Image (tube, rainbow, N blue to C red; front, side):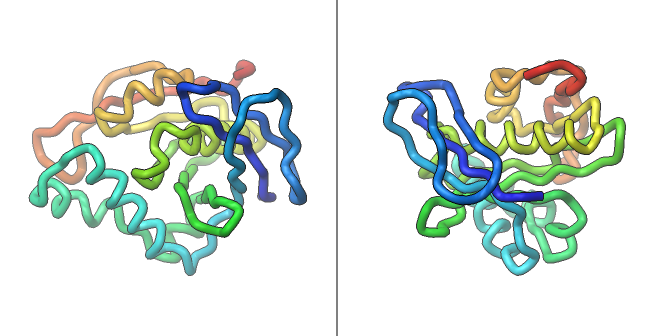
Length: 190
């Protein structure tokens, strides 16, 4: 898995993400102002930083302390979890981690295990860039279907990214809570 530069733009400015594989300076089409992020494989020693992003991003939606405590274990990554899943991070030009995503599964089925963005970057294209990268990675690995057990607050994002709701699944953190179960079919062009 190699690094990728992506141009991300506030949703209100432009919905396009233009990216180029490889290192070096980003190549961008179009004239809109934007921000560049580098998407690269996560390192196992970043697990604690990624856990912090996940917890802050979940709390962004206004969940109370009891809810956050119940979710803490499933939002906590260790080095083994980073290595087990294909985990990628988005970082700015200064190396600040802005978000991450984790892909798991073997052909033909995969799962987007996590996708979280720093709260001060939500709505600025980081999530779209991470999702597009993971979707492309899944296709390269021969996956034809990607499932997502989404936070209800993130369902609209995934639907906008081409997912379809296929049902619901019980929360592993909170008994009685249902999560939207989504699917992205990868055998067709984005």
